[in-house]
Image (tube, rainbow, N blue to C red; front, side, top):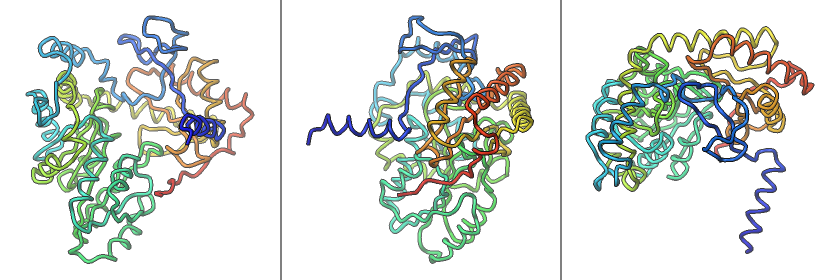
Length: 419
């Protein structure tokens, strides 16, 4: 085989399909975000084009820009240096890592927590471990689950039963096919990032008890924004202590990098000693761990920021409705504007950047199903109402320019195949 030719042809095919992904190099400046600079090339020395407003960040609470968080990170780097210097088992555990894990457990009112290099890795390796180590375990997975959840299950080769999105009636039918003594794990998310839909957590907890199943809940898009003190949707609903494993991230509302799981001591200790994605990788920087703990402390007292985000999100939705622009309406802060084809979403995103200095990343297959491409808008405390009005104006004008019928690209979201 000619390997170079193989990869070249595959890239050509991907480009022809419209699903080729391109990076947009961004220079974020502490005092001007969400105004940022877009570089034509990867260049951190100042060769930029004009200021651009970012409307697709996961830095929901702008914690990455918080002065207290930044100063904590700088202080720890000055004290201990940059890297942890090893895996958690071999010289890579510091007091900062332990303090962060204790804080996460306290934050979710659980016994124990474990920090990973990313929430993706936490999901993938934790689920792989549970699927591999628990004999004959049956997995029940929501059809819109994140790729990290899907890959953890697939890589383990576990028996997986997919139920329709938030369809607990279908889930119960699947669960009822197995004896109570059969190990079972229900895997779902509290907030689905591509549609903005929320799970009926109480229904899952009830079914888990009825059919003797464990629960694994991904809260990455909810931590920091939902529930009392930002402790997530499970906490908001009063079921946080009834979920076996909660997965969260340090890379969104917390404004750092990394992910975690939290739960009862036994299950967390089991994964800590068995999960290859935890055992065989260098731990996160001590400065990141310290900054994440600081950020969580701030988030617990950030009700004003949370209220501001939801107020602005509702304002965006009302303005989109006024302009007859199709979007998925949900209770969440995530606002997916439905476009349709991948090419069309790329065209609109590009024109928003070039003509209006607005950056909204197009989301397309395989992140979402084919022909349901979208622009996913996220608002932060630093966006103003004037910014929002300009965003709506720009989207409306761009749709007009591209001759897109406003009622023609509303696509009902559905999950890609598990295969």
